[in-house]
Length: 100
Image 1: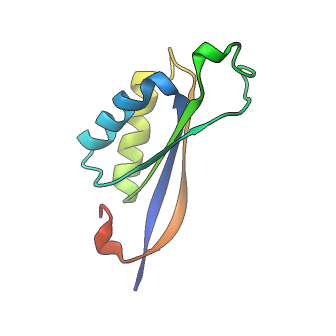
Image 2: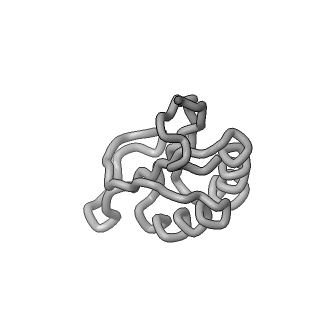
């Protein structure tokens, strides 16, 4: 059986990793995946190596939780940090493994 979820993807400055994981846990997210990534966006390529790579974090959650996470990130991070967050509709098998 498959069920619809939202995949939330966060791409942020590496220094925010722990804060963003804590934010997900406050929203009762039961699992997440993170990886170091590089890229270029509206703020250009990172200026130096000491700044490090970005982190990409993603998780699968219900639509209500996705909305709450995105609002929380916008409220606390958009003004002062370089990050992007977006959601996608996904269909998941084994829905008992994910936040409902």
